[in-house]
Image (cartoon, rainbow, N blue to C red; front, side):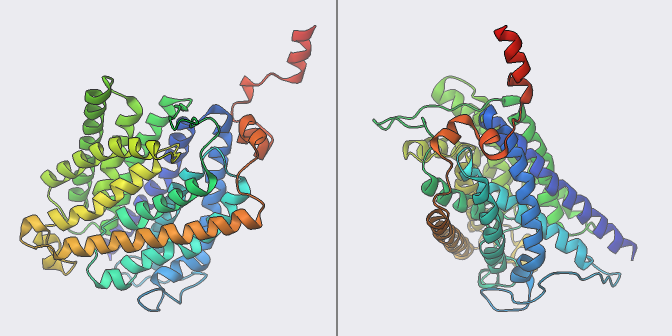
Length: 424
């Protein structure tokens, strides 16, 4: 009984850590974009977290973990199980932890909406993503679906959470089109710098801390102290990703670019999310380094492709999310995979190409589903709503004023009485 209570306490603490990651996303996204949209970014994150929570309670959890079939769960809707047998996790504890992952994936998806989408688009897409996109992929891999039965390894969500959110963000960037002034007629791009690198750095640090709940919390218990091993892998990969990204930017551009370094840390975290419970520490370092290098070149690729991704969600969570999932097919050790019945060992540990093939299938199937369904939903929304993008005038003014009637930084806007005094 005491052990079960400790397990529940650890997962509740991890739940709080993961939920606090939304605060990190607020600072990261606000700092990476312009001041005129800061209040909107903060507010819509809270609004959509509320929507996502209610939808997950109503249908999301049931679609993931309810009794159903290999494609979708079909029970446990409007969840409300208060029972606790004294063993394992209480149903409510598990439910709350799983809810946080859905909210993080939703927040990632909205990276593709930044600085140009109507608030109404956020509201409607939050409902549909939380009901019909994230739960389906989560069921396939974690809820007893066909990919899980095939042995797919995704310890804490490089595919389920990060790639799913990133593919929805990709669909949004395509439907919404680039921000005003981002690209020139000759195809060259203009940098639209974020207004506060300190916010961005603090956001990354909060996300880094929250990630210990994300990964180590996915052990679901404290009995064998495996959570410490997962936390170690998480820290090493994040550190390696940050340093690798900084040095590649320094080598290529001559400057140790701060945003690239920050994205490198996040890349290391995303990369190790799928493999944190499957690989040895030396492999975690390698996985983080590769993630840091990949995010640098991926950001450049999407920019050249004229895909406007203001907070680099496609690179950090998408490109690197793919790498993180595939890395299990290379580095998974038998003791943490084959021996416990969770897939097979990786290529470098005598497992051949079997697990790598399963991981590739997981990425392709999940990525295509998330992108295609998101794209269809957004195109229909765009048609029915008369556009999901704000007008040119509203975008220039900023979403703080046009969507909310106020400013995230009101002290920087002259008050009418001050204008009169100045005029006098």
